Length: 228
Image: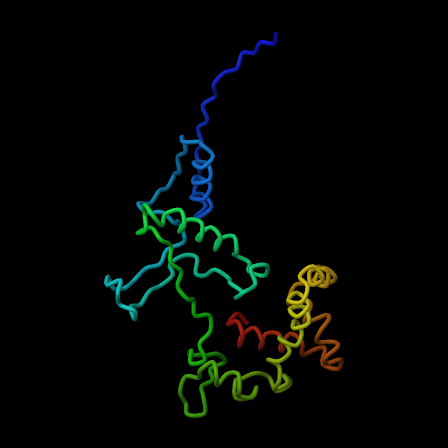
């Protein structure tokens, strides 16, 4: 007859906040039957860097202004969870909303659209304005020629098309077959976006313009990303 000296082990879990991950970890531990779980939080609210600040108190005001004080957005590809970088977060939101639907409906997590680009957004760089002397808009900046935008004359007027042209084949491959798309990317894994444009794409596109590549890339960054 076998005998054993089994002892009851008390599990105590202490969680240091990493925004949503800590809350989900605590919930999963609770679901697994581990009740003695403590989350440390130095503020009087949960969420950490995820914090939407509203400038008016009326929740029914559809036009009230708000600002994202911390993390700003979750990336989402409509209809393609396999390509959605933050799909795990969306799945967690769905799970928590279903979990709280009956007993705690007031705890529903609602997402709001994040306006990534606005054609009427104001642009100002290189000390240039539009043809009327006013602050130019995004729409104007994408249609004006390089001299109107204060860029060097050796940059082609179609410079903005280079970015899409350089990376469209990778996006297409990923969309058609994600595994094959990753393999195509791995072939250039040693490159950053900059080095791929500077050492691979632009020399093939403009083989006689080597000294201009940096200026072209800076113009693309300034116009498309605001980081040139």
